[in-house]
Each structure stands twice: as structure tokens, then as C-alpha cells.
Length: 222
Image (cartoon, rainbow, N blue to C red; front, side):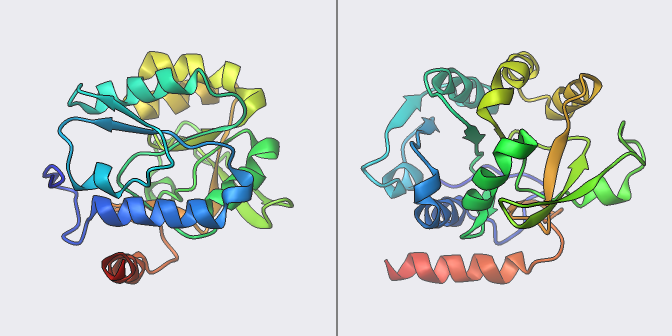
């Protein structure tokens, strides 16, 4: 099934490449991951066939982003420990899941996406109040940011504080993270980014176009 049209989509966008990059990162990071569950919404096509058989798939027929998200949140309630929510339009570097997992216990709430707009807009609630740290476990630099999308990770210790607000605000992601900011819960993003949302605002500092082409070549060889 072809991805739906969006005016921000780049011409080379591929959900199959995004899935493949996630699976590659998962394999690289498998010692840091205890379980993986996929949620598939709508008619079955190439994407669900590309998911390896060892991973459980929850099938829903909401046919909406909100329905998929709520099904994902519901499934996560039966999973203990740290949690990483991933949408289907993100490219992952091989080391991204590992570094997110390593940073999460100390940072609490992170995304692998380094947002271009967090550097250029001046209407963030946290504008002028950001911090940068070098996180020792991940050996990576991280900065605070006002908000991100619905692809983010929460530490086990932070889940009870974050998840009720995620359930409440659903797809209104910026409002969610602004609410958490007002509650004193800071979001951290990596510098440079470890993943990118595949729209026009790609994470800066990395050649994602070439990486996507490599993903496509690798996938086509299998």
C-alpha cells in the first residue's frame, strides 16, 4: 500500500526504507531491547509483510493516525520498563536505538530527532533556556528542546509522570510537551540527530538522502 500523500513529503520518502532502517538499528542494538511490538492499522500490504515473523503485530482497523496512536499507547500499558514509541515515517541510524536506550535512564524523556525548527523559531516556551550536556553512558551530546512529535522514549521512572499526559493530548504533540515543560519535565534531543522525520525538515548535520539510498539498495538485495 502506498503511503498517503502529504505536501511535506520528500519525493524519495519510503515507509519500507524507514521500517528497514528501524530493523537494522534494532539488530545492532538488540542487547539493549527486551521486546518489540508492532501496531498495524488498516489494510495489509507490503509493510506488514516486511515485519519479521518473530515480532508480535497488533492489528487494528482505525485507519487514522489517532487510532493507531491510541492502540499503541494501550499496548504499551502491558509492557514494563523503558518504552520507545516509533512512528512509521522515521529513518534510524544503526546505533540510534542503542544510544537512546543508554541515555534514557539519566535523561528520562528523549527523542532521537534533532529538530531543525528548534534552532530557528523564537516562539518556543523554552526559548533562550536550553541546556546542552554530554551524556556519559551514550557518549553523545544532548540538548533540551521544547517539543517533538509522537516518536519519543520514556524511562521507566518517568512513565507514570508522562504517559497520562500523552494519553490526554494524543496527536497534539506540541501541546503535550509544552505541558510537560510547565510541569518541569524536560525533553532531550541528540546533537547530531540519531533519527530523522522524513519530511522537509530533516535532522541537520547528516546526509539522510544518501543514507536513504543505501537503505533502498540494501533492502533490494534481500
